[in-house]
Amino acid sequence: MTPSKVSYNLVAKEIGVNHRTVEEYIKLFNDMILTLTLHFVDVNTGYYNYRKQIKVHLLDPLFYDVVSTWTGVKRPDDSIIFEGNVASHLSRIHNAGYTEIGKKEIDVVTLP
Image (tube, rainbow, N blue to C red; front, side, top):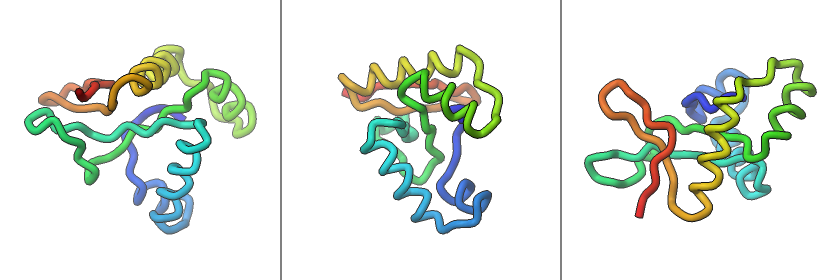
């Protein structure tokens, strides 16, 4: 429920399904405008690296409350919800992703 980096394989292994199934569901949630998937951006090339882990954000802060109540999981901190809002808004006007410089993660970057 937090925008931690995950992989399709990791989620699939945890819930006991094929990684393609996880990928298809996340794509469906993106198409339904429930989530936003950010891919890793290589700062040296300026291109997405689809082999790296992804970050999945819920697009509406209300979704965090609904999912939290439904699953019994603690609602994330406001900073995590704010990060999702920023990613959502930036992705509407630019191609957005996330990156790392050294050991520091940049939560949201935009591509021209």
